Amino acid sequence: MGKVYPQIDAALAEWIQRQHLFFVATAPLSGEGLLNCSPKGLDTLKIKNYIHRTIHV
Image 1 (tube, rainbow, N blue to C red):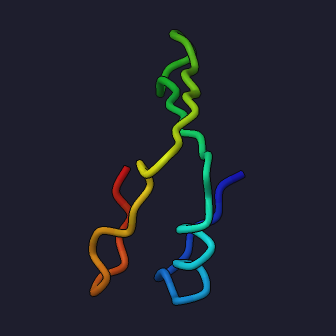
Image 2 (cartoon, rainbow, N blue to C red):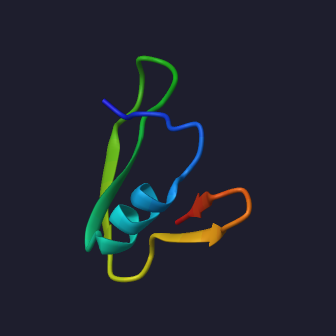
């Protein structure tokens, strides 16, 4: 289960930057369709906005 953080503090930002692999998953809102879970890696996870501490993939 995912966790929602109110902001990205310095400790969390450091942890995010150390990650080599993460997953992005999507699922349809209805019972129809398929789940999709894709591995991502290298330098695709970055903190782009240090003022608002938002993450872009």
